[in-house]
Amino acid sequence: MKISKDLKTDLYKRMVRQRTFEDETTKIFAGGEMPGFLHLSQGEDAVAAGTCANLDLEDAIYTTHRGHGCIIAKGANLKPMMAELFGRIDGCCKGRAGSMHFADVKTGCMGSNGIVGEGMRLAIGTAFAQKYKKTKNVTAVFFGEGATGTGAFHESFNMAATLKLPVIFVCSINLYAQMTHKSVHIAVENVADRAAGYGAPGVTIDGNDVELVYSEVAKAVKHARDGKGPYLIECKTYRHHGHFEGDPCNYRPEGELEKWLKKDPIVLYEKKLKKEGVLDVKAMQTIREATQKEIDEAVAFARKSPQPDVEELYKDIFA
Ligand SMILES: Cc1ncc(C[n+]2csc(CCOP(=O)(O)OP(=O)(O)O)c2C)c(N)n1
Image (cartoon, rainbow, N blue to C red):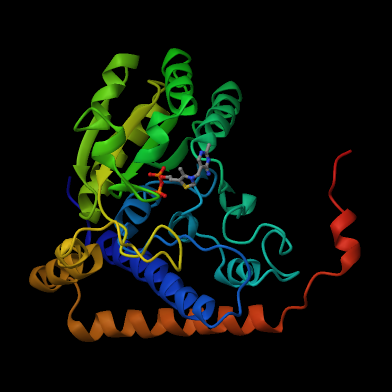
């Protein structure tokens, strides 16, 4: 697939925005200023960027406990996102959701989810509505390989395939489900092979190659918009950080992280863009500085936002 210079720049900017946001969050969390638990996705940036660059604002996504990158790539505003991480009233969920339960419906970010696999059940509900209303919109659902062993995965995929729902199942293989290596709980080499068992296409790709992710997801989105049903895209990648911030990572063999850092999707893409003459070092530096400024402003906004009042606890509750 031919990818224009503008699109290449867009893919690069999306990844830099995701990475800078999460690197800044890492520092703030370590300083003790942010409540709750934090699961970060540095290293998996190309999966989110390459997928979301195919989606319109009205398309929907569902993500996991490791969802910041996807939400940023889908176009969420960074100020309410950062305020949400700080637990403040100006957060996109008024400070109630924190990192693990983000939602920003205006930009189609329907929800992160702390229950492994459950985003898939919700995704087929949204996709059913998209099909029923003849919208031509699609739903992308992100999950890790740990989720492929859940009933939610098999039931949702089977239902999506049977009803020909417009869902793109995006599996980010980062090698570990918490501390358990993929080889311990998955018998097949490629989980995308399972799609055939449900009568749908599945493909396994290098999840660190943002243009490859973009091109493969483009096929899946077309397939879904044309009413042909779901598609499974398996992206092989790695998470640079631990399962959660504070994880000592003593389950990782020596040298594994270093090996994957050499395949950092942003570093690889910078080399490619430079070689192709799309962006030079100065242009990339300008993008990085502008992004850092945007994130510094989001942090300042979050710090200024008040803590929610106690009465907020009783609002928006169904009983
Ligand atoms: C239904 C359910 N079972 C177990 C857990 C505990 N848990 C939290 S994250 C996780 C691992 C998930 O691994 P994966 O789906 O590969 O996503 P990753 O963390 O690698 O992004 C588990 C088992 C949970 N949150 N929900």
